[in-house]
Image (cartoon, rainbow, N blue to C red):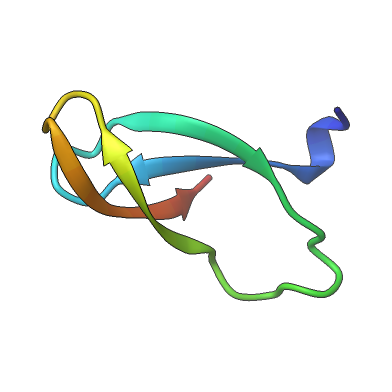
Length: 51
């Protein structure tokens, strides 16, 4: 995977980076936000793209 396409997804509640993904930064300008399972909170929470 190319490093310039990699993004970190961190939990909005506990602020821990749980997932790594990739996106096309040319077509998606806004920050990505997904509902994923957080293993630290033990529930499904919103995960937002971080730097």
